[in-house]
Length: 202
Length: 149
Image 1 (cartoon, helix red, strand yellow):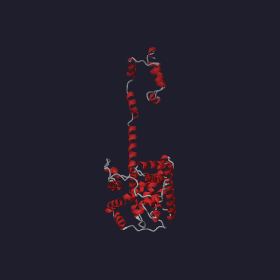
Image 2 (image 1 turned 90 degrees about the vertical axis):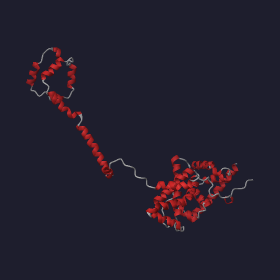
Image 3 (image 1 turned 60 degrees about the vertical axis):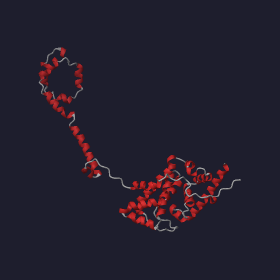
Image 4 (image 1 turned 135 degrees about the vertical axis):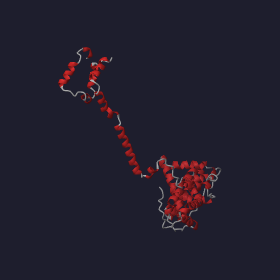
């Protein structure tokens, strides 16, 4: 289920060169004397984006914490092989995405849970989240998003919440821009339909 | 009638879920750095020369030590001293043996003789280095009182 992780970028998408700060981080990381400083700088720069990307997929803070740490450990282990023809941010995002999808997939395999049961578990965590207390529409929206398949939910989150450009999403997911646009369009329709169905039941 | 829900009309919350615990993003870099740093080498209790050996060599050395231990314990086992006991027993004069058996409260019974047949014949043979004539003479010299049989 995981998205393959070659360090190359999608040929259909432009290859954004690493920004100046990223280039500085990569240069310092290449020097063993300044490697720790560079990596600390990298973590501080991307930790919130990675955390929230993961958190929206797994909902639970503890799971998100574990996966965020695992993501950066993998970044540390493979940063030496990172080819600078792609954005560092995209590359890190891609690792985090794989971690999320693998986590959800292994969770289903481990407990022999069908799709809906994992969705129900995540839905229960959303209902218990204090950030959504008192906001009925937002809670319905979150529960509707959780009914999407994992990959479509990933596309929805990146586009709707992070406003990630389709080209960058294509690099992260290894999917074409056209397929991503279609996936997002269908996701929006399904989410609206789910919310309206829930409203009619009340 | 309720208004149908449209996503583009809904106010978007970038982070709809509750945030992480306070100070989480201050601690996270340190936790990650602790995970990626190689752990300090543990104090080894093995002697320096042993740790200097490669793993296959250490395994071979351990095998040699174990086999040597088995060999030594085999050589020092009680069966190795049996010939010495037999030699010491052979030096006891025959008359003293007979006197011992006669004076002892414990008589040699037929049951004892039956048990004797089940004992190690090789051990018995070491005492019977005599010709049939010598054996006959030895038997004739013994008292014929049935009580001792």
